[in-house]
Amino acid sequence: MEGGDSGRSSMDYALRVLSRRRLSSGALRDLMSRKGFSEPTCDSCIERLREWGYLDDAEYARDYLRAVSSGCPLGRRRAEYELRKRSVDPLLTKAVLDEVYEGAPEEALAKEAALKYLNGRDVSSLRREERVRLARWLERRGFGHESIRSALLALGDQDPD
Picture 1 (tube, rainbow, N blue to C red):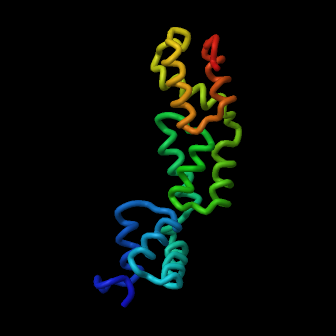
Picture 2 (picture 1 turned 180 degrees about the vertical axis):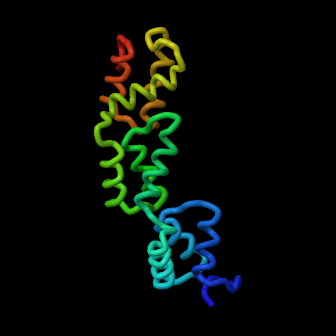
């Protein structure tokens, strides 16, 4: 039997993994391949799990983005990176990002993230190095330079460069 010496079938393994945490079908495929299951076995198992409703990559991607953005918004670039890191299909990633970020200008999200970072402090009261640190933090959150600059200007920064 495939899958090493555990004697478990591919479906048993996949269900055991999914009972512990939610995964994309790509991430599950990677785990199963590393465990020693063949590609056709992985494909048939994943297809069956999709039919049963245990795997839904689009819903997984939406839920994941909602969870990581709940405390503080993410820029589109970072969101795309996080989904690809979790082996979500690139075409599906683009579709979900278009859906999630529809009607949400990146400048507004960057401003919201900056407000969370500032935690009630005024951006104009920050020293230059603190403003640079804020801009770098926003960049790591996935916001582009223009969005960061616009957000800092909207918050009252006189020198956002």
